[in-house]
Every structure is written in C-alpha cells, then in structure tokens.
Length: 404
View 1 (spheres, rainbow, N blue to C red):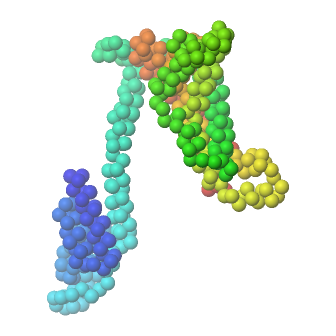
View 2 (cartoon, one colour):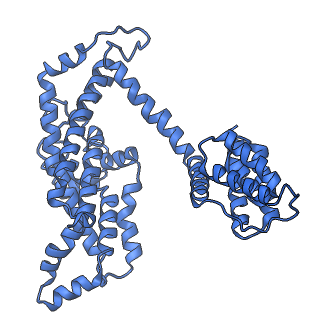
View 3 (cartoon, rainbow, N blue to C red):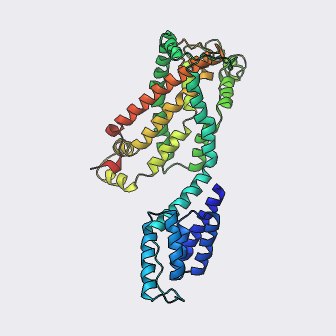
C-alpha cells in the first residue's frame, strides 16, 4: 500500500506539471494513473474535473466531495459547472473553452505531500537505525533501571522500583565519579574549543599554502575509530609494549623518569588523546570564519584596528554560534573516550569519570540494573547542564535574527 501511494503521488506530481504547461491530454493520463493507484486521493479528481467537459466534470467534482466533503475547491468547481450547464440549457458541451484553474493551495499541498513522502523514503534507513539501535535500547535501559537484573543472568530479574537509584545516591563513589567528570569537563572542553578556534584561524589564513592538504591532515585523525586510537596510544605510552620506550626513552636513559601510566602523567595523556579528535570542531569553526564578509575586516583595518583586535572584536562574536554548537558537541561526546585511557586506574580516583564507574558496575560487578540507573542519572544531569547552556546562550551568543 505505501508503494501505491508513492506511485500515485508521483503521477499526481507529473499531472500538475503537465497541467501548468497546458498539456491537457498528458495531464489527464497522469491523473488517471494516480486514481488507479490511489482512488482515495482528492487532487486527481479535481484535475480531471477541470480538463473534462462540464457534464463529466460534474461527476468528478461529486466524487472529490465524497472523498473530502469540506473541499472548497470541489464545492466552488461544482457550483461553477452547474451554472455553466444551466446556462447552456442542458445542451451538450463539445469543448471546454474555459481556462484551467487549480487552486494554488491544492497545487502547493500536493507538491508538499510528494516531497515529504520522498524525503521520508530517503531517510527511512536512518529512521529504522535510530529506532532499532538508539530509541529501543534507551527505553530498555529505563526499564532495566527499576530491576535487579544481572548481566550474567538477564532472564532472572525482579522489579525493585527506585532501589537502584537509592543505592547509588548513598554510594560515596558516585560523588567522586561526578566530581572527576566535571573536573575533566572544566579543563578539557575549554581547551578543545580554544584549540579548534586557533587551528581554524590558522588554516583559514590566505597566506597558507596547500590549504586543502593541510586541512585534510589535521582532520584525518578524527575519522579513526576509538579502538584503533586506543591501540595507538597504548603503543605510544605502555612501558612494556610501547615503541616510545625502546626507541627513544631507553637509549637516552629517561625511561626510569617517565611513566605515562603514572598518576602525575596520566592526565596529560588523557588531554592529548582528547585533542587528537578536534577535527569536527575546527571544521565547524573554519566554516563559520569563512562565512564572515571580508568587507567587515577591511573596514576595521581602515579604522585602525590591528589583527588581534579584529579577531577579538569581529571574529569571535560572529562565530559565537559555532562556538556554542562545538561546546554542546564536546560536552555530549567527552565522556565516552576516557574509559580505555583510564583503564589502569580504579574509578575511585579523581582522574576517573562517570563512564568509568558505569563500566565498572557493568563489566566487573555485573550489576546491569545499577549500571542502567547510573546511565539515566548521568543523562539527566547532562540534560540539565545542556538546558542551562541554552537558557544562558542569549547573553553571549550572537543571533542575527534576534536583533531589534
């Protein structure tokens, strides 16, 4: 049935197109094809009524009114055809010399419905993936959060209400995990945004040679999957299997002074691994910078502003929307990559975050219900933070469409 509807919409679209070009016969054929596929559509009957003789049009308008009794186009057309038949004294009409008139609302609605259906068919694979692999698992975790489900035996569970949430709120490790998360966010997110702005400014410079190649090289690390990136950093920092020690540190006698897995150095490794994937951020910033008119900079330079003043007073305000978007993007994606880098530490340390606590509850303690509850607590906290950022964005984000 959906296929018939789409074919009918396609035929209707062609009928309207032929009708606008004045090709009555072609329009009639396309309208008849639309009716053959979906006789419940009103628009094909209206098209046939407009290009048919008055007596035939009378029947077509009646059929359109049966489908949609509130149709103004069908009511007006029926009244006009009735007057024409009465004026002709019931004489048969051999030719229709009246101009073709289809309501603009009808044409617009038909085209909009056609485009909407085509668009839905084009994004159907993504919608199916969103439903099967995002929405259903999310709702499933909500149900799991109210049970005592165990990862090793998920078929045997019992509904326990809010007990999982009470257990987590009474666990001091939850506060430590959230504190570590927010400490990481306060350091890493501003640094990510700043690095993206600086990198975008450098790569947007007209003096830069081989721009496309350089931009591609800076963006390339961002497309590397998380697990290969983890293996790369492990190969770089692990004192037992990493290549940095036998090739660089051991020959220089520095191996005993450098421990990338130590408490003092591990935050630096985490920081570098986060900056490794700022490609999307600097790409967004660079697009925003390239959208700023050159005349604005030229006017500022004529008024005596230097490059730094132009950057602070023109570039930064005009790309504040891109900064805000990147801030939200980094905020929602920051907490998924620290588990593997932080695998050498227990979640109790201040270096760890909520996702590491969740990983511990799920894959070490096998408490599936507690892990689901923790995920929803984290989701609610993140949602509150994002809503606060949106509520305060009017104070520091430049929106041209909201100017007085």
